[in-house]
Image 1 (cartoon, one colour):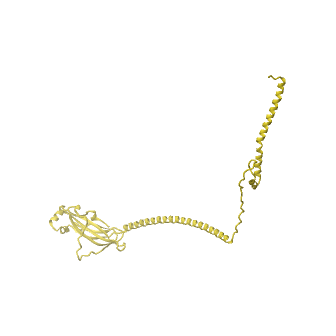
Image 2: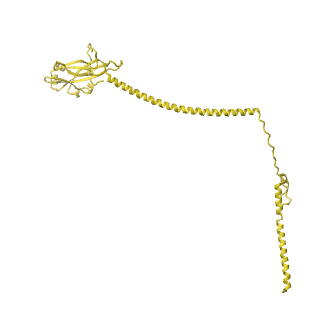
Image 3: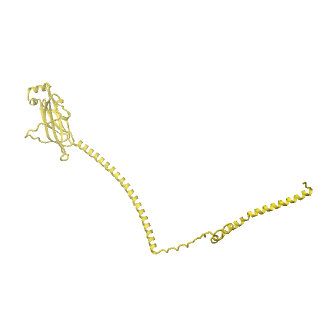
Length: 309
């Protein structure tokens, strides 16, 4: 059906009215949806501002009645009453305080004592080390002094030497003389000698042993001052035959097939030495050289036969 001009004019107001109605319905729907929000906000604000007791009794179910809930009870205990400070407690506290102070002082005194002991120990060790070093130095000094004193004594002691010198005015005769070459007096206490026969010096014995002294013979001690001499015995060409004992040995001595050695030993003491000091000893040995017209007596023999103590 075709609408005329009046139909079109009537449809336009109707559409406008329908739109207004739909708009109003939409606004009402929105308002109904937003209606519970203010109530909820107001309920929460009221809950936060009310007292704890009211919050326990007021329902909170979006404005509707809720089921009965268990009340939350908060019990506030009163503050405990202060305990009175008795005299006994005061005395105990004071005693503890005094003990603490005394203990602290004791600990400090103990630490100070330990430090002093440590320092004293270090000083004692240093002193002991110094004393040991001083003692060692003193011992070394004493040894040096003793060696020096012994060197002086050796330098000042008597030294008796034995030599064979030709006898003055007598041909082919020799005098065995002991001379003090030291710096102090000496006393000759014994003088021994003997004759040995050997092909050469290598055939002589290693040690010099003397025959025992005949009974009844006695040696008269001789005191020698420094530089003095004393005659021990004489030896001449004529004495050789008596020592040989036979013409065959005399011939062997004259032909140098065998040698004659005159050896001896003297014992003497140092007059300035302390009593009981060991006596000194001088060993000597000479070789008799027989010539056709002249003879000689020269030092010979191994070192053991010419030693000095």
